[in-house]
Length: 615
Image 1 (cartoon, rainbow, N blue to C red):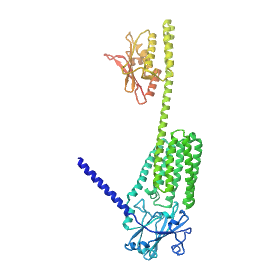
Image 2 (image 1 turned 90 degrees about the vertical axis):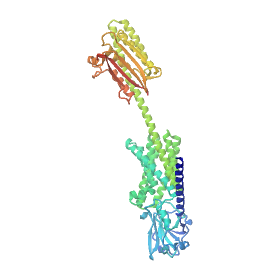
Image 3 (image 1 turned 90 degrees about the horizontal axis):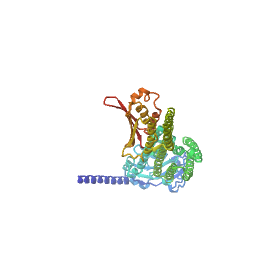
């Protein structure tokens, strides 16, 4: 088995090595021959080819063109193929390859007639089989003007560019096919970060937008829109989004995707406002953010007007102004939050914004898209982590408020129950005095005052340790036994695995059921055999309390007083059921009543089981 695995592994490595060699050869085959050219720059767009071919026009080397390209200028390129004529004449077809331009025309001869070959993206020229490379310009030796030249007319629209960066290469049909239809290892390395970024954007956008639809929270809406427009701006060329939304690459589609870079910052500002709740937490920063949002709104409107009216130079100035504003504001805002952040949420904004700004500056100054993609990806992930952190903190706060609400409600319920017990006790003392049993009344009053003192001492605590609760129960049972002339006996016990000095339960939770067992079960039973058992045990995360009496049973008691089923049901029991329901939200039956029967099928008492959560 090990030998076979080794053979498979070796075969895989050999295939992988062959692919690496093939891709390396592919890269070398794709490299064309650099062709020299000269440039003529003019503000006169009406010049014809004949005008440009006038010997009096002074063409210059690209490296000597110091000005950046601007939309108002036209660039004529004189491509000199004289040094490669022997190569061109050896084959009937060759291709000239150049970078992509918005507007471009190549002039060449075809059947001795001058023809114009369009190469501009705004003129509908694109390569359907490649996302990176434009179509090559086919020509032959008979296509050359003056037997050695090709002339190219170019216009740039938005990008700042230098003619010194332009390159023209001569490639064979095979090389052209490789460029137009296949990707090299270098190409794949370039495209991989883009597709990774696309995946991150789509996942984050879907999750945050769905959460917005679920919660209707503005920060999730603006964050999802921020991610969406960032996705448009950085991946539109690679994914051919221009074709998807506009049918083909055009000035309109280009204008839309240019405006997206302003919308990125606009939705970023709105996200920060709602994410940090700046209106309350950072009033000064809130005013600044609102001002920037208004400025960006104006820039979006003006930029759209400039682009759709072909006012390209004002568009360039406006976008440069927007970059300057956002850079300065970003630096000031990050510094402000770094030193004045009221919680960790501000630090998420600082770190994410800093990484995005580094990537944006890398794209602006070095023309490397990968810098922007890496910075944006890190920022998206950091902001998503910030939103997650915010939700966790809010959930913790919500749970804290719920817990406080539960504690307050429990205290309110205890306040309702204590008067119930006090009223019954005072009523018993009154009956003893009225019946002339002053000695019993004094003893009862002493025990009652001692019990009340213990209750008051424990009133500040929601819970009592089990030993204290048992002590209160014993004092209560002593009072009731004294009140009813020792007509019943009682016993309280707990299992060995339950430590009564550690376990906690809500105060006076058991007392209403003990009271019902005595008054409605035991006292109505004839004879002297009246017993009450109270047992505490532990069952996983619960304390189980069982109150068992051998009284007349629930049916007989309900027939006598209708205490369990009708609208006059014991208030103490109702209050306790609500307390247990608050403590055990995931358990439907925290209280279980079980009727006891003897061998003859007659009622023999009641068992009440309470499950009290320890969590």
